[in-house]
Length: 340
Ligand code: DAH
Image (cartoon, rainbow, N blue to C red; front, side):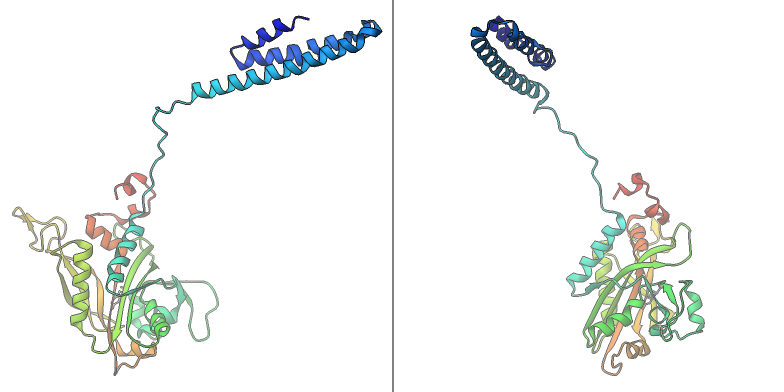
C-alpha cells in the first residue's frame, strides 16, 4: 500500500478524464480500496483493527485528494473556454411593422391636438356600419361599399353582423360614449373589403377623425387636415378639397395632398411627375357631419356641428414612401419589412 504513490498519481493528473479513471481505479467497486478491505480476512485477528483503520483513513484521504483535484481541473477548464475578449453572439434585430409604426405616428399627431384615440369593433352590426350613418336599410348607397356579412342570425333592430368596411362605424359609438360635446375622436381599426390588387388588400386599416362642438366649420376641418399633412408627410405639404358625395356628410369632399415628389407642380426636370401625374395625390373622404348622423348619436344638431374624415393607413404609408404595391405589407417578406 503505497499511499504516496497514489497521491502523486492523482496530483499529476492533467485532465478530468484521467482523474475519472483514477477514481474508478482507487474508489470504484472493484477498485484498490475495496480490494484491500476484502483482504482483511487474511490478516491476523490482533492486527485486523489497525489494518481496517488504516484502509479507512486512506479511503477518506483519497476521496479528498480526488475531490480537490476535480475542483482544480474544472476551474481550469472553464478558464480555458471562457474568453471575455471574444465578440458576443448578436441576435437578429426585429423592427416594428410599418403599419403599426404608422398607427403610432398618426395617433401621436392627433393626441397632441387633443384627440382621443379609440378602436371600435371590426365586427359590427349593420346599424353601426350603415344605418347610424344615414344609410337606411335597402338604401342604394350601401352598394357603394362592398361588405362581407357574418353568417349568424340578424339582430331584431341592429340588423346583420358585418366585417366593418370602414371606421365610420365608430362615429355613432363615440357620440353615445361621450354624450355631450366636445368630441374629438381618432378611431383606428381594421376594415374589410373583398379586393386584392396593388392598392387593395381584403383586410386594411383606416383612421377616422370626428370633431363635434358648437360652431365647428369647414375651416376647422381644413386646418386640421393641413396640420396632419404637414406633420405626417412633411413640411410644405398642402391639402385641397374637391366636392364629392357621402351619405354621412353634407357637404362632402375628397381630400388631396400636394405631391412631395414634384411639390404640386406635376413636373420634375421638365418631365411629367412619375408619382402623381397631376401634382396631387388622393388621400380619402371627409365632410361636415350630416345632421341625421348627429341626431342618431343623440346630439342636438341645432346646437352642435361637426366634421369627419376617413383615410386608409396603408394608403398614407404608400403615399409617404412612394410604394407601389401594398400587398407587400402583408407578404411576410422580411426583406421588404426591414427597410422601414
Ligand atoms: N367611410 C368612407 C370610406 O371608407 C371614408 C369617409 C368619407 C369617412 C367621408 C368619413 C367621411 O368620415 O366624412 O370610404
